[in-house]
Length: 189
Image (cartoon, rainbow, N blue to C red):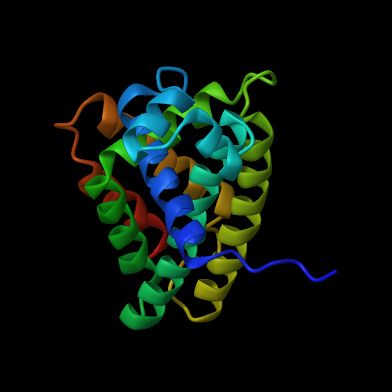
């Protein structure tokens, strides 16, 4: 039996639930926002939300995955368009700063997910593994183009980006972009 293609209305409703969850999780935190809050915001019953996402953990995983599904192709397109790994990295950080709530959600959850009992533990464990591979491959590509220093590594770049975001969220006066530029000067002069 062939699988049914999701209806346009169903896809739109799923996106609406994801947007609502992203906003609520960003504002209230994962533990502070309930599925009932999400349901109320999109005009559904709890059962209606559970039709699309069988659990709060599934909804969280979808919210987090959606960020990567959007950001990775966006970054690759910007890099191609700008012709500069350095400038595309800087643009990605500016983009993240413009969605501080989503950045806060990601930073908070990635820290909380260090606890093996946290519902996002497996997601972040796999995400960092994938990110190390992805950034290492992108840096290898940038190295072959002569855009970055041969010593640049994916894990260190990830640590710098995540660390700068955390500092900026804790202290909004912190000049994240100047600090990013100082780091990028060391790998992509």
